[in-house]
Length: 135
Image (cartoon, rainbow, N blue to C red; front, side, top):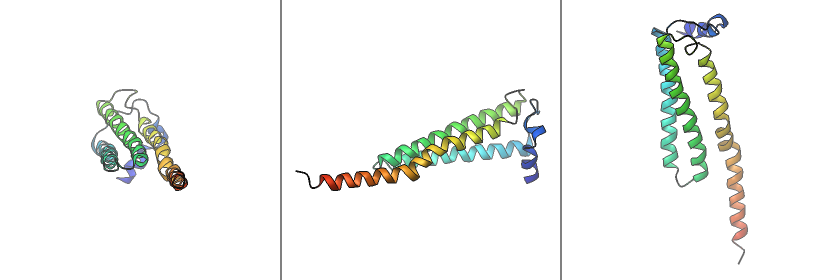
């Protein structure tokens, strides 16, 4: 199985514009991969609704949810075209491109949640502490 995944990223296969239809193990691997991405988007959506009292965290989780669901759906569209053997739309370079887009897209909300959100919370805490003494 791992040999198949490694072979998928060989340059002569990756940049072939007519790779043939996607069947068997390759189809299963991609369906599971994009299925996991969609499930992660649904989980992020549930967490967004669960964290409604923390609006700033909910905003970051909503961005994560949108990224996962969009890439997951586009991935299943890619799987459809790859299974049908469409010439350009089934090219193998779309899969790594989708993963790069997902990582780039997720970098913004993760950076917001990890770095910016604690600073914003600290600023709000200081402001409340300061306003506590104002008439």
